Length: 136
Image 1 (tube, helix red, strand yellow):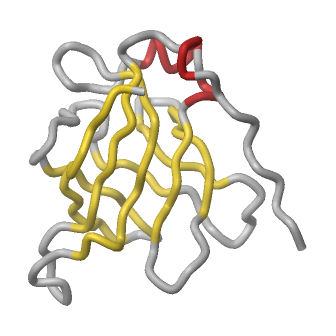
Image 2 (image 1 turned 30 degrees about the horizontal axis):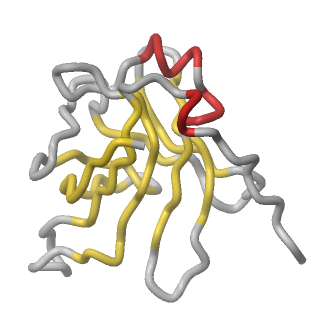
């Protein structure tokens, strides 16, 4: 069964604030060194302070995509979503079995290389570190 691929985004059509961000699992019990293969890569508008810009997100929602990377699993693709009350999360396209994952305080987090962020995955909070950030 073939999965539909997302429609390509023309990078030149996005404002300069858009970045590709990679976060990888940081140290936690069971992963004393972290795990660079457990990661997310997502596209988001980032303001001058390193935070996700909700106004630009609203204007360019379709461009705010995510890839969920896990070793020995097929990559999952979806979108960065903004929930009522200001919570950011990842919603996976066409996957009834994979629930949305919520960024823990993403509204307040700064996306800067070396900073830590947390994601609630199926009710458990995991720490991630921003490992790269690049212009589109």
